[in-house]
Length: 354
Ligand SMILES: [Zn+2]
Image (cartoon, rainbow, N blue to C red; front, side, top):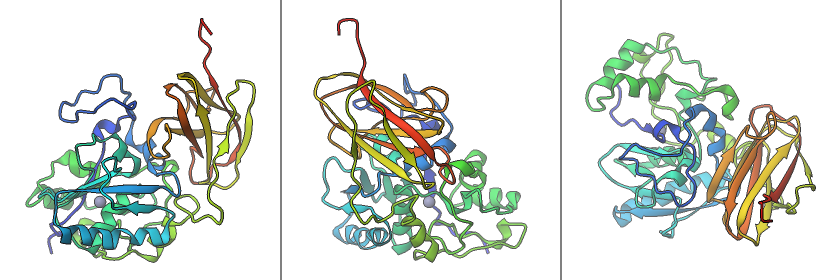
C-alpha cells in the first residue's frame, strides 16, 4: 500500500532564525534577514514552548463558519490536558493565525509563531478533520513530529521513503524528505517520551518505509501519552496556585537566588521599567540555563532569548527597553534532567552620562 497523501510538513523558520527584535518586520520571501544570527533548529525545541498558563489568541484568515467551528471544537481538547487556553476572538494581535488554503496542513512550532509577520498565517488546513486539528495545534503548542523523536529509533527504509514522498502528491525533494522524515532532535533539547505509536503527532507510516517491521496507522485522537505529556511538569502542568512571577528589583548588586529543583521546571520573574534605556538581565551560577524575555506588559511577546552569553554557561540579555512590565522565564538547558541553583539580577546599564 502506498502512503497516504495527507501528510503534514514542518514549517520551520528559514534556517531557524533567532527571534527578531520587536518592530523588525520579517520578509520571508526576500530571504534576507540582516542582523540575525543563524543557529541550528535543534537548540530551539524546548525553547518553543509558551509560558505555562498562557492564553493564546486565535484568528481565522478566511474559511467558513463551519470550518471555524470544527477547528474550535477539537483544538480546545488540548486545554483539558494542559494548562494552556485559546481565545478564538479573532484579535488582531493573535499569536495563532489560521488559513484554509489548498497548501497542505502545517503549522509553525510553538513560539516560532511570534516571528511570523502579522499579515501572514501561522497554520494552514488544506483539509479538516479531528486528527489534523489536534495535530497542528500540537505543533502550535511546541510539539514535534513523533517520528523525529530521538527516542523513537525508527529504522527507515530510506529508498522507499524517497520514492514515495518524492512522487505525487507531495513531490518533496531529497532535502525536504531528509529534514521532515529522518532528522531527529537532540535529546537534550526535547521533553520526550519513548515513541508512542498512538500519538496524534505520529505520521501514518507504512511498513514498507521501515526495515524492522514498524508501521503505524493515522491517529485521529489524542493518545494516553499525548494527554499525559501535555500536562507534564516539563510542558503545561496545571498548578494548584497560579504561577506567580517573582519580582526582581532593578539593582546590579541585588541577586535573587532561585533553583530549578525538578527537571523541566520553569521559573518566572518580573520587573518594571519606568525609564527607557538599556537593561541587563543575567544569571549567575554553575547551572546552564536558558532565558526568555517577554514584554512590555505581555507574557507572550517574546523579545529575546539567550543561552550562553553570560559568564560561562550563564544567560545574559542586554536590550533597550521601553517603560512597562517585563517577564523573564528561566529553564534549564538540559530539559530532561538538568537541575541546579542560580542567581538572577536585572539593572539599567550605566552610560557615560548616567
Ligand atoms: Zn505535523
